[in-house]
Amino acid sequence: QQQVKQSPQSLIVQKGGIPIINCAYENTAFDYFPWYQQFPGKGPALLIAIRPDVSEKKEGRFTISFNKSAKQFSLHIMDSQPGDSATYFCAAGPETGGGNKLTFGTGTQLKVEL
Amino acid sequence: GAVVSQHPSWVICKSGTSVKIECRSLDFQATTMFWYRQFPKQSLMLMATSNEGSKATYEQGVEKDKFLINHASLTLSTLTVTSAHPEDSSFYICSARKDLGNIQYFGAGTRLSVL
Image 1 (cartoon, helix red, strand yellow):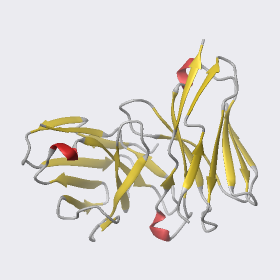
Image 2 (spheres, chains in turn brown, yellow; image 1 turned 90 degrees about the horizontal axis):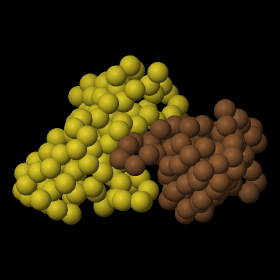
Image 3 (cartoon, one colour; image 1 turned 90 degrees about the vertical axis):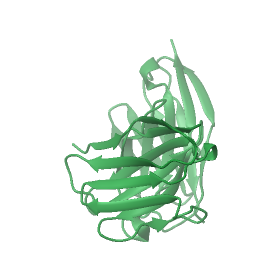
Image 4 (cartoon, helix red, strand yellow; image 1 turned 135 degrees about the vertical axis):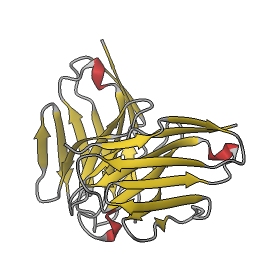
């Protein structure tokens, strides 16, 4: 009930392409879904987060799509750039309570080629 | 902003010694901080939840006597790896929770190498 499954494990796109990373969760008590970006040797940085009362959220070139009935959410990166090459983690957890713990996906290594 | 500082960024120690890692929230108060461990090209594994003024809550399988956590103030949590061994070599990352929601802000991580 606590797993968050993330796919694909790795992804290569051309500059300007739109990589899509998918996550699925099991625990229906989860109501907070952030995405983190991590560069090698650095800590994760919060990119964007969504709550289940909306189906889509955009911040700059990053968009989260959320499907509550399917318990799935995805990250789209518009007009991807080589600087977006990093590892992306989805996460899920309760907004409040539950120790405020986040369960992380297994990560997706994205490479954006020129 | 929400800046979390972690120190040191890299430490090498001899087997059997103890190492202390600090995690500070620089521009906000954090009643809750989290400690994670990350192996190369793998996900973040939660080790423990650190609450200011109380004992840390450890995840199943994490040795509390080996990984000592202290959260003495609203801006500082420390993780001490006691009697470190080569298998403790890893990337340790802290995060701090801001406000009452679940937003976690991460430090830059500490790479521990035990010789």
